[in-house]
Amino acid sequence: MLRYFAYGANIDPERMASRVPEAVVVGPGHVERYGVEFTIRDREWGGGVLNAREDPDSVLWGVLYEGPAEAFAVLDTFVGDAALLEKAEVTVVTDAGPVAAITYRVIPIANYVRPSDRYLTHLSRAMKAQGLPPEAIEAVLAADRDAGQGQGPSIVS
Image (cartoon, rainbow, N blue to C red; front, side, top):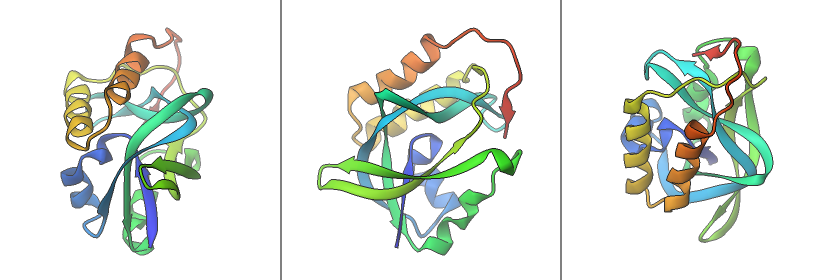
């Protein structure tokens, strides 16, 4: 069995079921020393989507799934430059204790890409439905509100 930590749109179990039908929700959790930023432009969502970044002072909230390793292979197919996709091994802190899992992020980090209101609403609803704490939603909103004003290319998925 593989454990996968989702922190973006895949925290929504319906969306995840459409991508990885065999995935089963284990529950909410967080990864220490990672934060979120909007540095990936996504055509489906019409704006920026979450990306994980290493940050010793942050916590990355999300949802832990598990299922057969081969079922998650679809997540290896990044729409964009596959050389920029990193599959990272992380330790997810859950109510039952720490759990080893994989997650994905895009590197190198590009500049801020404004998320669509539709994406932010989707994330907020999914986070609440999955039982994530208010600070999880606040971290996402802060990543949008406090984003840098850099000018430059963004990664497109």
